[in-house]
Figure (cartoon, rainbow, N blue to C red):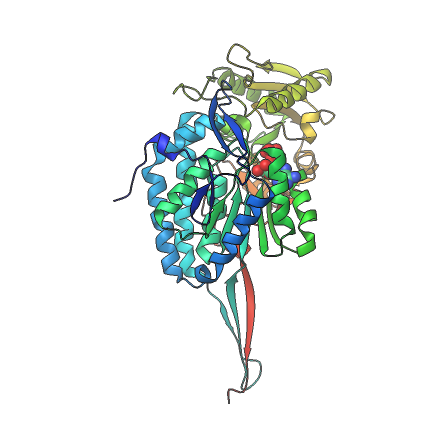
Length: 490
Ligand code: ADP
């Protein structure tokens, strides 16, 4: 029987190293709070270098046996983990909403989304094929096999506290790697709960290790992983600045990296689009998690002929959105993650207003709800001199840029160092073909705002990083290819 845990049972406040829940080596702790009201949820282990080292030691000790397990044995453990995640969906979803702030329906949705990667990689585990290379010389057999890369360090952000770490751990375990992980300081509890379920599923001691840490001590702890030659891979989701830091600091031991970094997604609405579908797609992609996702449209380009009509349709829907704490089941937009996040949003909006933008709806903090709330906002007359054009706002703000023709839309959409997601709406087949090819991003939504799927390759180009998560390509990042040449056969 798949065990279901009471919500409080899922809360773990220690590190998980070598199959045991242990405090930080010096006993330090830090507070995890509810972003809706600032109330303490728990105090968790605040790890430092010694804890990071202990996690690597445990992962190194477990690696030889784990990599020799049969793929179908690893698949079976992942299937059990998946079943446990699904069986505990309500409690996990509520925990996500509590420490991260997203509406309850989205918390539950994230559990299903994260679980889908575990199911996917349970299946992919048994399909890691190599190649027998067509014979080149008589008496010689050449083949290529794929091997687990070794110890994988997974560093994750707070916006999807379950899905981001699940989609890193699952492929790593599937191919026989061992894992050391550190979740974001704002949301460590969900990751620990997930690891508890992995333990329950039968992941052997040392195969999966997790340390939690506050920002400063976490940087030191991860620093130890970056320097340690035993750690062969870093998989990271977070900001571009930190991604570059990880690439630089791990260069000394030439680790393989997967970096899923910031975006600045364009969303283009052409004159020939189905405007109702475009509004619906924008709402889904922009306001999920209060606009705090790396694939959220950050710049919305609308062709001149439909600009006013699109603005009016959008404003009507956005002004009706319900803002509140996750604990209220009718909430559609929760609090932002912390005060720094709300300050950035306010700075972007103020800057846009001084550069000629017009508030169509929203455009203000909501102090009556709490210090971390910001109203869903539509700004008209956005232009490229505004801060929000160059940087991710990471909040519920839609700036509407006006454009005249397709060439201008593509040029402006690509005028950013980032290249994660893009979206466009058009009913012209030839335009769809042209624009899909011209957009410089790893993901393109065509008449669609909800594009993520465990079956699809997720990842960026340019300064949005490299590597792909999910899909049949998602295992490659955790594998290395070995060439075998056997001679003297005839
Ligand atoms: P965000 O802006 O979403 O918080 P960050 O890139 O700052 O994204 O953080 C993502 C993850 O990277 C978190 O787990 C955070 O603790 C970690 N992190 C931040 N700075 C560093 C650093 N210098 N070295 C290692 N990890 C870091």
